Length: 206
Image (cartoon, rainbow, N blue to C red):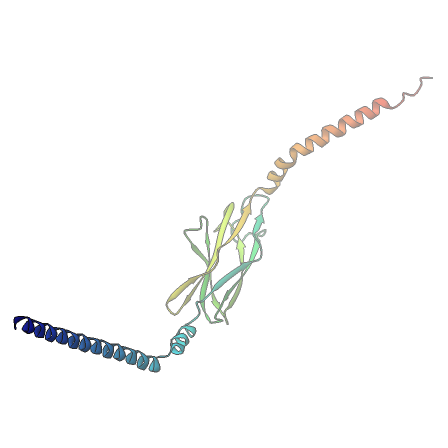
């Protein structure tokens, strides 16, 4: 009798466990179905195309470019003062990628770190041109760095940096550079003419 009671108890426990497992599995399937349904519903209202459209229509960054007419300048003596008569000129052109109007300035630096304004100007349809004298008020012997700044809608933009190399005492420098060659050529010419004269026959004395 006791064995039969134990078997019945075990059978009831097994049936209860199976029913609980079935109920748990059914709930899990329903949760999965709900998650998939919500994902499909969200995908129907928010398409990947709309997200890409938002990225594609983002504004293009403004690009500022500077071009100059020369990269070097040579003075026979020192760099002249402003308003001198023998000043060399530097032509420059600045352009903005969005063809907008605005105010800018051309700037110079000796060490490519600290910048000073040389001249202010206005962009017209994204382009500005000017001419700068190379004088002692801003230029010095060696490398001089140039760039353009542009102010637009509360944002300050800077162009590419270009280098202008200024050489002074050019005549003296060239003379010192060429003097060894001049000496060699002079000595060679002297030796040549002396030997040529020695080889010439001497006219007989009457």
